[in-house]
Image (cartoon, rainbow, N blue to C red; front, side):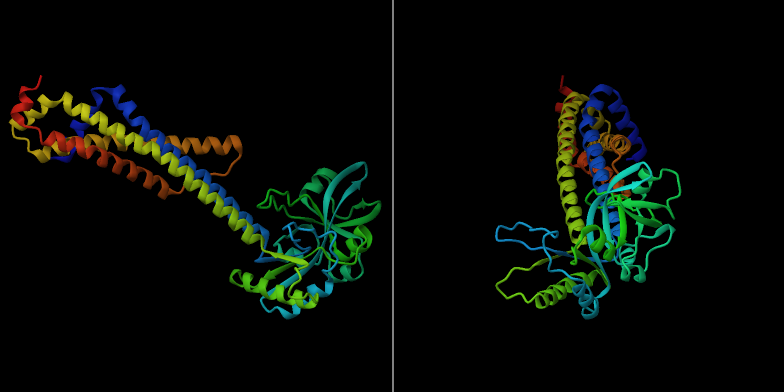
Length: 405
């Protein structure tokens, strides 16, 4: 039987009752559209996490001062004084898988320039910090080891701080005040954007860690040590080696808890990405139920069609149509019905993803394979649920069919 003729007859049969055809396709349209839109949102979120991971820096291992008490509560890095510069130097010298190390001290303070004020986070770090974080200086220059040794009154500003203090004015070379102390802006950092955890990375002021220790925070210990492993597979073994080294340096007995915490932002972000993928899969599975409902609708409408066209089937068989011809005819109608619904669902899903992206400023990514999978699955639904009505039509007795009123 000619395939084009079969498709023409199928389209003509579906066009006889346009409203019923449209309502039958609705389940497929909604199902395919919901799946594509859900996958687009999930893939966009996953891509955003991956971009944020790359934005974090090179294979970061983060050592924070602090401990976990018997109730599982983090005591905090600001009250723990056990992490020292000597620990950072020991990690650099004794852990081969760690390529760069930057001591870090944090604080928050009001920053002033002329009559403008801005409350921001202050990071006291070593020069290696910018390399670890892959954070270039957009204008001006970075501070040096000499500045760290001398606790120099210099700083780098993030883009958010520059925008709020200086507007369009060039910040490099200007003097700002922190805790009523003057500091010279020697550089402006390139935009970093948001972290995977929603923090504005550009809302920051970076100084030599010795400057923050002596002139801002008034401490002689570190709050954290930021390290860079040689490669991603080296992160976990490096964490284990750092753990053993610090326990030994801090003279902790086997029954004592750690007075430091080691974690990798990569692990946290990957866990977040995995949770997002599971949620996407769950939502896509729920949306797929609409496809099954649409398939059941196709089967119902095809059974009704077989009943309504019983005499037509009898006439076809009487003039020479075989059981295979009749079965192919009804299968093609179910396939066309589900395929058209799938195509319309793709358009709906893409449009929905675009609307979500524009209205909620949420990133969306539509993988081509998801569109192909949705169309193929919708066609498979049509064939699966159309098989029984087609088989029933093919096995009608021609004489009984011709007598049917």
